[in-house]
Image: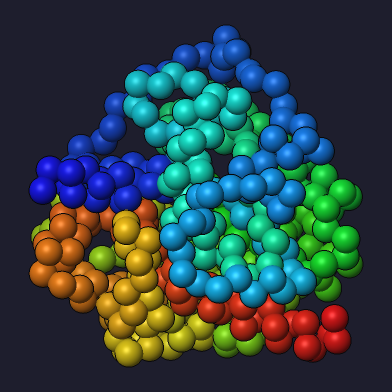
Length: 352
């Protein structure tokens, strides 16, 4: 039983975000001026990519989903994995072996895997910012510079991808949390009201804040076959208000009050869903459990109850209150199928 709880802990911190707290976390830090920055990645070298079609990996072994091999690329940006409160680094060292292994066995395995069966998947290592940068006191004292460094890597990776690897193929942009924030900026810099938007199958901007003012020509998609736009959501567990007040959520509900939101089960603006519509929740054993999640309500966020599973799994899941960590996993099979359906529709629409 002890090992099961350990696995549960690792799984639900697999996207590298804050564990649940009733008190604010106190972070150690250092001056950004004194911070020793590691060298910038060379994205023409496949060693700078966590996942690249030209390199082999066993991280997706054990998934039973058949690979479609569509002529579509997915560019995925993983979330904040640099979260240790005692780590004074501003940006991740992507040349560190432990860092690389953590990326592969957490976000890549349990999040990026949702897009693996579509076509070719690209996941760049990047010098992401430490999670403390999202606190105002740190943002104004080195955090902004650290975040810009992270985006500069993503921008460089994407430019290299376009130049050396894309070969005019349609593109899916996907990311979670910090990764979705960088993905939003990629869309603004390279797609929004620009020729490249014609190649955009869809953008999955998950676990961040997207408003109606963020894009001029890229729209919130309204059904499962829409292309050229984006979907976005933040997930919260439906709980009594007395419990909610005790949780220090990763994504503050006040911060997203003007956020747009998609239904990741029906893929439209339906404010609820039914259990039998749910395609599947990816669990820690890499098995997919359908009909286990029901959306109770949706406005600027989605509210779901504790997933409907067997007693042991439900007991283990009951300790998790902050569902930001599971924004992708809860709807993993829904995302996988939807990405394939949108891609096939895009290919047929443009006779590719």
